[in-house]
Length: 570
Image (cartoon, rainbow, N blue to C red; front, side, top):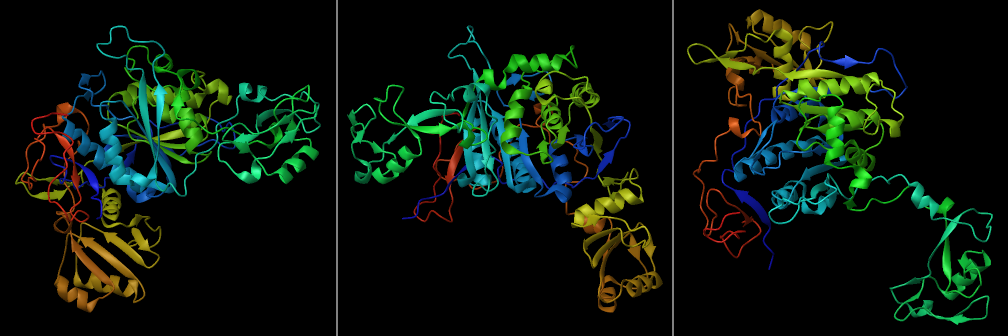
């Protein structure tokens, strides 16, 4: 019998917002670049986006789908505590819905060899794990790394002292994704010695026995001192006897300084991997703790310090494992800007999104210091950081359509012709690239398929001229206010190389127009309301979350397997 596929479910899960793909408007006054190039690897095309992060992620899709190597997010933990910079107490089902909407776009933005890293605490970690299994595929779960965020116990803790956070790690495609190695430490290299003055350099002894038993590798060995030794009980030697003799002849077997010890295999430092494999326990000595992070924030803003910033060494560890120089890194919950600061110092290209005022009070001042070289905290000294590069500051454009005084949708008067063309290109999946010589080539889908947007009322003669200029081997999507002298149906028959659409009517159904805030700020959101959805037997209440069976894979039952019994709360 086929096992049912379980998925996380919650009230309102079936609702998905119809996001408007906004355009991004640069504010050069807030952008910042170094006065001179410091190195050949300086990155200048980094992006700081001010606005709702769900709309910002949607805005990035057209250009960055499949191009982001690493996404790191530190979302609100939904603990019920009120933080200084955002309210972190969303009703459980709303939190899951908002995370789902963002993670779906993040997955599309990731490159095939990209990875997602999410810091989260115990309150939502395990629900988030199941949600990510559903979105990314359980087979693409890499690991749950544990970060020791505090270095001492909380003596006022009511139950146990919470000293760690989780870092959930997912690959876009685990089969093709591999983490980089961590740099070897001095302590690791110090374990290698050369007591026998081997000309191949320093080495360290490794166990010559293994657990997996093979009769072919179970034989006695006579040491140089004349002692006969056998493998430990239930184990065998690493190699066959013939291979052992080859290693012995090559001076790769060590019997101790007196020649009477159990044999060891000599591992030369020159032959080991140029780095070490990361473990899943990350101590504060390795990657820093909360107090380190707060000190780093104070360097550029002493007045308001985040409650839960992340230390630069933690982001350095993640970006070392997940990226190489020149790769794109995305953080859509930018907070105090640690991700961008670390990525910048490490020579990665970055995109950060932040809606709160701290985008201007924390992130911009921090990045200015990084670029100018005056930020010597965090990982700066380890990176030998001297400044350089820059970033562009963007804000989300207003909605393309707005209601007039009679309640009808019309083109937003804040939009000029270029903005409207770019927005309509995004709406229809075209790349905005206005030609300098051909006025109707404002965007393209292929090298023979173009888009032309105008608020004009086009005449029959104008359409005829466009059709002739486009020619029979190209096509043109025309989005106009109206046209005269011919119906749309007749135009399609007369000019098969033209497709005509009217604005705003042709795009009214595409998006939720005029909605600017999909944020995780509970003050801006209603509590989840019951919706008209089928209620399976055993369904959790409106404030509950559970696991349900996939009806396409479960032919034995139409009921839902709930995480909680009736009346229980998560």
